[in-house]
Length: 257
Picture (spheres, rainbow, N blue to C red):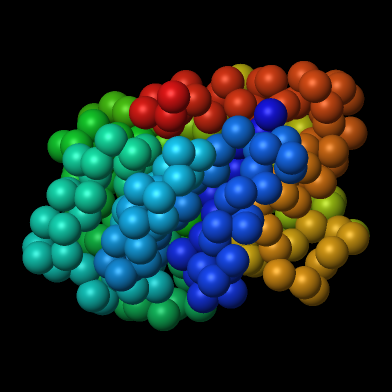
């Protein structure tokens, strides 16, 4: 059984089919999934979805796109959400210099503040980093003393060289549908470099749909296609990939039962 460590059942493309999607987890070979927030409303909705399903957990947080909305009032709500027994992380937080939807200094500020918040509530952090790995590295190492419950680089797009750097922080790395794309050489190289004991899988649905369904709406069930590709790249059986990545996810997200 697999764990989809990063999905957005709280997205409008999936929310109307919530019951059907989660109801098929058993036949789809999925033990559970983590529904991740990206702003305050989506974080509250993720909590609500998790409360309705034994096999769904959640993570509240403010995405770098919305860093300019972060304030003490919103952090108070995230702190309250984090006290829920089904909250497994703070995320997705980080830096995104590809879209630059928020001023970079505000992105850095919100990133640091949420690292501190995660340490306070004793939960790991789930990072969104795009075209910003060097600044993310600087912040993470500067704030190393606040990272005591683990960190996950969601949809890892950094280099194999950065793996060696983030390994010093005992980072976990998540891979999704991008490893199945035709132009996935860079992702494959990084996947090959990640320690097996730090590897987890995701869909990031409804985005990043794996081949052969690319272009369609992604769903948690397609984490099986990610697992197939990871098995091929790492040269181990699907059974081993399933077992390793599920154990890793439960070690990082310690509230998953």
